[in-house]
View 1 (cartoon, rainbow, N blue to C red):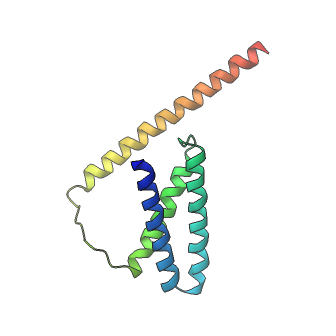
View 2: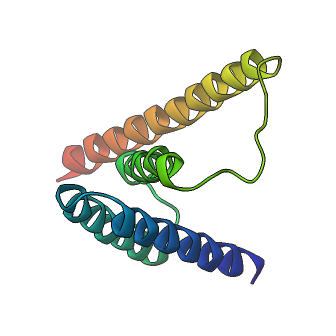
Length: 125
């Protein structure tokens, strides 16, 4: 229940931010951010019906879309707090590289497993 509430809150914040960007940006950018919001809506639907994400692209695209929205929102919305995390930057970078390597190794294991299943299946056929 907590996860659903967090997801709904995240969706609300993203929609509110995109609407603020669309109101305060040029007409050329409005269509881009509207389509970005639609793509995020599709990603949220994909999250609901295919949990956990078993392919690498949907989470990657989700992060890219949210990053684009966050980057553009800095131009229009003042941050409530400004955090200075320069001393922690190396630790965060190493943790993200380690987590990427862990996810990559798990993904490679899935590929090997499916390949082994396919070879076993086609040997018996």
